[in-house]
Length: 190
Image (cartoon, rainbow, N blue to C red; front, side, top):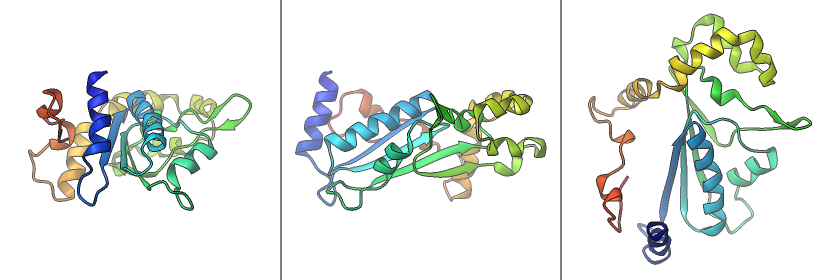
């Protein structure tokens, strides 16, 4: 807990750049869902920070109202939240859940960037159009293959995407936290 306390103190005492602290929260799969929920709490506690959420393979986690609240800050005193969801190919985890309870829909927040869609087998492309996780029964072969081929395999596709955007080959900083973060540096860089 002392580390979290020092981060909170740092956010209050040491704004960067234009006077607004910048916070990026990220995660993969269940970690992405937790990161997104945590970001919504951070947004409430620190309404003025420049908040970025970057997730990989996140399941759907929010009601339409929750998604609207985290995405849209117009008409409020809250700074905008930048959200980027990365989906690898036909990652089945990103398609579920579609509802909770008696038909309550569950949605994604933010814009989606899909990696390597052109490499998805043609017999599996329709899986992303499901309206209920119960529909996955008809796509069981594609869904099972999607776990190992897409959900657990982001790195090579992310590296190819970043190289196509101009990142030099071998520069894979996107997947490593700066060691100073772990050594207790008061100004960590990620």
